[in-house]
Image (cartoon, rainbow, N blue to C red):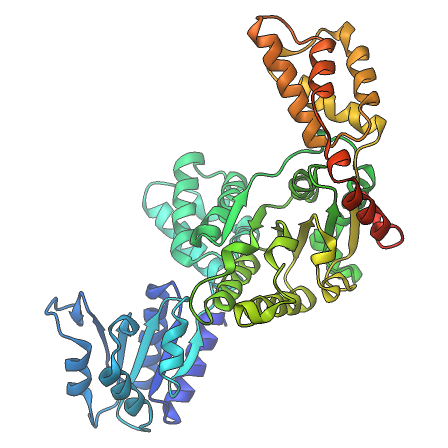
Length: 493
């Protein structure tokens, strides 16, 4: 039995027992209506619909919510009335009418179908039972794939069933968390682009799933970067190689659980953000970025609701890498909870609970510059598997960083092969320069070469580095304190 069928059966039992007021939260109105029509058939009740635009049962005669509720008031016959976006039409009178309707134990049952973010509706209608409609589970997606295969065969794609049969479960697992309509649209696009190549369908769905899930603006689908884009960080890269196996399908049979993630703390400009992108590439997973500042809203409860929505979207995309960027800035005010009425503390508490108790395969990589701003409970084992310290690059790492940026441009801008040794020597001598400062120096050297329409030369880089006052000089005390904190508390990346 699919999860949708289970929710239908549970609703039928509740309605038989006298439930007459329900709020269903979902962004999939069509699936909610299917659930309610199935419930109506099981009960032998008629199912009617209302929306401010379509009227009653789609008759296009506009009727206010107040008028409809006045008509239904005290109706003796059992029936289901499905109200779409009624929360937008709530005033004191309609809210009271809905509460009174929910207090009955017979007659008309009123079901509000509301978007997932409509938290304010629940607070105004405490008598209505809340049901969250989960996205399709694997069995429901497999059933939909069977329907799609039948439609393809009737539409001029012979052999679609045979082609799809061995890949149904893999496709369904890849699409877990997607709304049904989005899944079907991606499948249609994959068929148009790749014909009956089910392997290509699988790649297409996996590649486009993060964009489909991150549509609400709280999350950003970000491109992963290969290990060749980063200079150094060998300890982190080796650690990630081992963790990749924890996301394989066979891992569970060995009692191995998916890796929970890592916290990257260290000197500003030394590659923490780039390392987060490399994590996703090394694990072979899509990457979603969460900037904590986006969670905070202006109304009471909005910030906490945003966190719940964002984390729900992340879990729907799993397996996935979640990059929480600049964690220290997002929760810098948590100790001064009075300044924001405790919002930061509540959001942090929700995040900590999720980090500890999440069961879906989500690898969390968080970055922070100022570790003293992080609450101690965030650093406790169980939230992250490991804490890595990203320090200023050493001589060999500086060489690797400079080479990445020197050799990564077009052929015409690259230095001659015989000059590389001189560039390496300059990089080794650039003590105290961060990766970001070395990247900027290479960019400046390349500009000097472009102005004279020639290849970049070692002297260009030497001059650019000499003109830079590194952060290690400007903020020497802060970096020293950070290094002292990391000693014995974190592994060097």
